[in-house]
Amino acid sequence: MTTLTENTVAGNDDQRNTNPASTKFMVALDVDGTLVDHDGHMSEGVREAARAVVSDGHDVLIATGRSLNATLPVIEQIGLDRGYAVCCNGGVTLRLDPALADGYEVIHKATFDPAPALRALREKLPTAKYALEDEEGNFLSTERFQDASFGVEAIGVDFQTLLESTAVRLVVFSTENTPEEFSTTIRQIGLAGVTYSVGWTAWLDIAAAGVTKASALEKLRGTLGTPQHLTVAVGDGRNDIEMLGWAGRGVAMGQAPEEVIAAADEVTHSVYDDGAAHVLRSLLP
Image (cartoon, rainbow, N blue to C red; front, side, top):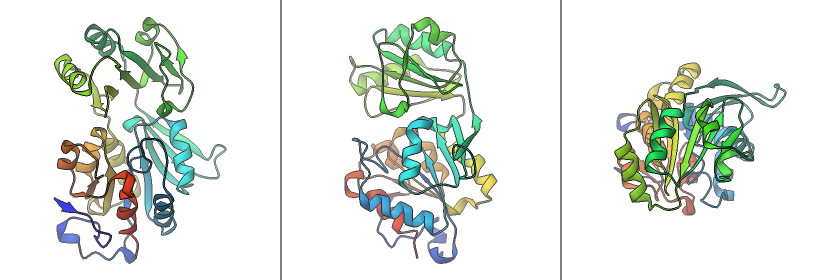
């Protein structure tokens, strides 16, 4: 495991002599815990470093568990107006273009039937809160469940309505379990037909089977024509594990859990010490 310094150059070990001045990277950036802290604040240092890498012509992509409307403000903050972004842990992919009416268009959505997972979860977690993003971008929730990552105000519905909906993203939150108890319960349930990741708290994000940030980014890598060794990813959460393994250079934030750090090639500083800025500045000439 390498500890990052600002002079670290992207790529695998045998590509460490690559000159950033003549190289175009594909850079995938997580949001919460990476670009912004857990209060949603982006430091000036991170903002300036991200804007500098964008201005230098690299393909910078947001890759987040957030839904579309919660992702757009971050895209604006770092000066992205062209390229792509991955939302909902790979469930939604955007193409950014200032010539478009909204400045973006959704080019891919991966939907799934949430009913089997919901039934299995409710049996074990009857007091948990449930919310899902439908194919129209609406959030439907039980228990007046609301979170900043939704990007829109959730519509209160009964559990049966959730069962009958088509989902892009399903979220489960339990206030009555510790994160450890929650994780153990999820493993015991053995969710099938979906992809899921457990968060920092008793929080679960679910997407369609096989859908991760990495799966969406790999499709975009083909579109951009970027060689694998010129891909860089930075993240801190369990939903970043596949992405960090996918990247030619996967960098875990300093505060990341052990299993996330194990999936990375390097570790940078924590989000509170502008760890993402250190990675981004290392890509500049």
